[in-house]
Image (cartoon, rainbow, N blue to C red; front, side, top):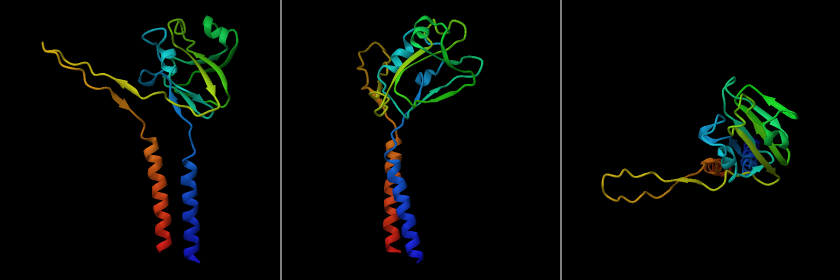
Length: 183
């Protein structure tokens, strides 16, 4: 009887591990390492969003300190004009985390001072499919020139370890099940 209970427990654990494999929601940190603050140029947040796919179930995280910035959700007209005639929502206590539950176009900006006018604004389109962070971010490290021609190093790709952790959980669950069969 005890062996049957342990086996059922292990089957439940494996089922939980397999269900974890179907979770595909992404968390998008707005602005990446720059965060939600005044950008260096007016198109910074547009460029940040361009390679990404925002899917239903994903999350947007606006990292900022209360008082220094905020997040105002507005319609397209207010977004283009940096006005607040049709405010949908306002968030003052950073960081702000928004669940993307519906498809469509969403518009956000910082409503403090002239932040919107200088480019602290974000337009995203949420789709039914899976979200993604776009192609891996690659950058080149600038060589130090000491009078000779040194070739630039190859681009370095930054990838997520989330799928590796997920795979580890699934393998661990399967091994636990197999172990329970022999005990």
